[in-house]
Every structure is written in C-alpha cells, then in structure tokens.
Length: 454
Image 1 (tube, helix red, strand yellow):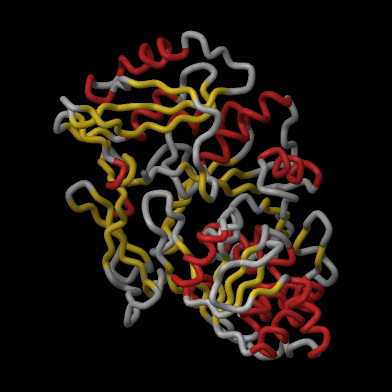
Image 2 (tube, helix red, strand yellow):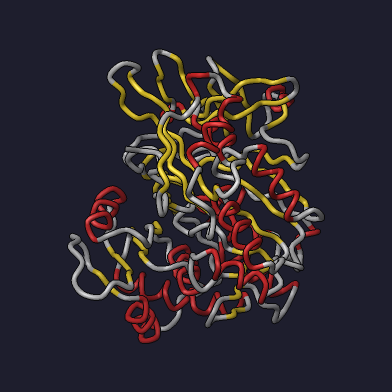
C-alpha cells in the first residue's frame, strides 16, 4: 500500500523532499529505504502486532511504512503515556513487540527494543523487498478524552480510500499538527502521500516549535484542532510574527465555535479556513469551507449510494460510513456500512447543523441540560482568556452547577476575571451561567484536545 504511493511520488517528482524533519529530510526513495530496513527487522523477528512508543518524527513514519511492508499490524501509542498506560495499551491491542525510546525496563509482557536496535537488525538481515503491494492492519486507540480508550481496526487501504486526490495539492507543504497516534495525524500523512505534497514534522509538540517549523519551512497548509489554534493565536499575537506562507487552515476533531472562527479570520484575513468532520470510528466524513460554524443541513439529503450519510435522531448525529473502521479489536465481522451513533449532540438552526458537544459532556443543572460548548464560546470572548473548559460541579440542591476553568493569556490581569466572566455570561440562560470560576495554570490535553472525562 504505502510503498506503491512512495514509488509513484518519486516517479513523478524525482528527488523532491517528502518528509521534512529536524534532522531527517527524506525523498520518497530515502523514506522507502529506511522503511525496508525496519520491515526486514520485523520479519526477522516474526512480529505480528507492533506497538510504537516514539515521538512524532520521520523515523516513526518510516517504521509505520516498514510495518506495512512486512504485513505487520501496527499501533502508535501516545508518547505522553506513562509505563502503566503503555502496558494497558499493549494488553488492549495484543501487541507482541514494543519499540520505544524509554530508557530502563518497561513493565510489559512482550519484547522491548529501541528504534536504533531494530534498524541495526534490518541492516544485518538486508532490506525487505519493496516490490510487493502489501495491505495490513492499522490500529487506532481512541483519544480517551471522554472515557476509556478503545482499539479501532482499519486496513491501510481503508484509510487511503478516504483521501480525496487533488491535482492542486502537488507542492503543498503541510505541518504535522496532530500526533501520529491520532486518527487525524495518520490521515494527514496519507493525504500528503496521495496528493504528492510534503509533510513538515516539528522538533516537538510544543506550539512554539510547531510555529517555528511552519515559518522556517514555508508551510502552506495547517490542519489542527481548535485547542491548538487557540494556543497558536495567543502566541502569534504575543510574538507579532505572522505565518507569511500560510494559505489554508483546516479545523477538526473538536467543536468549532463562532468565536474561534472570528479570531482566525481576524488574525488570518487572507487565509482560506475549512472544517472537517471526522471520527476515529467513521473516518473522514465531510468538509466545508464557507466560514460558518457547523455543517450545512443539505448533508442530510445524501443519496443512498453515497460513501457517507447522515441523520439526526433525538438530537444526536448518526453516520452511515462505507469506509469507516472494520470494528473494535476483539469484535467479530466488519461494521462498515452500518448506522452508528456518534455521541455528538446537534440542533438545526435555519440551513445549519450546529454542534452542541458530546452526549457524555452534558451538565444537569436542576434537571435542565446545559451544553458546555455554549458556555465556553461565551467565556472565550472575555479579554485575557486563552483557554476555557466548562463542566458540571456537584451541588446538593441543583445536582450540578456550571463551573469553568480558565487558562489566561500571558500577562493577563487575573484581578476581576471572575466578574468579567459573570458579566459576559448574562447573555446565557440562568442555568448555563457559571457559578464557579477557577484560574488554572493548564488544562489536561490529550492529542491537542481538552480532556473532558473525570
């Protein structure tokens, strides 16, 4: 699968850099050569299911390609995971080899190697042939932002089939702004391969390093979560250093609010802004670029032969996807082509489907259901607020009351912030108005999305 894509890029654009990282800048042929070494090592070891615990890097991408070459099932783990979480993930995915950069022993029930050691095995074995077009399984652990992660099964061919080819994409430079353990990160990589673009891999996952990589390497396109863009906007305004080469911003993986769209239009008045609706289970579903929050109602009218269809039941969005996941690990059969509840609550306003948040995030205030996203969108407009999370706080009388945690912009005045939040929220109904306001140093974030469980 991936070898064929790499070979076609090299044939069309010989010698052009495909992966641009801090220490490794590879053409498709160079990437494939690295992948062949890792593939040989995995074949030599008899690996069936590989877990990768490495930072996002060209080497991680080559290891993914190598696993596909060798026909090995592969899963990328969150690099922020601690030893206990790694062990749990390995049990969930039934891995029989862990490749990690952790020093010292790791308490797992399978062999553990470093990437350099694995590559050395490939050098000794001789590189794997890249002639055969192999399909294999890719596993994705759901983000765990609203509960215990599950292990989703795809074939590489399923993932590639979701990418829409575009002749205009040749020569574009995309920033890797999603982690590669995230569905959107893998889709970003495959989008670059299918469309013969280039992928810029930052030195680290910090927003400052990512913006620096975008400037240095003249990135033209950035696809990232709303949480990333809120951090990025604050930093760009503080640094007063624009992104002169940027042509397109794509938002996904969280609810996109009107206030964020307004901020992006103000900071990037000449940049095209689009939104993608996708999920780990259903895959890529729909994209819009009209500058408005939500999705057009017209998506409810897709024909029966469409690859993705939508309907709304009791305020929840349902999806029928022909190219989504095969199923959760351990389940029998293939669930592609079945209607699935998304857990996303929506309402129709005119010609628009507006996202209200997840079913699991609802706050019950005296029997009234409050959507945190509505509260957050208002609080986000308060001067000095960089990031906000609304949630239910236990209350003996009301069951729950609305509380908000705030991360303030650097240099913002904390004095009076509570009053400013209360005043801004007078526009909300009384059940939705925050009763507790907490200023915190940071919010828990997984895969650049705010953690809402617990």
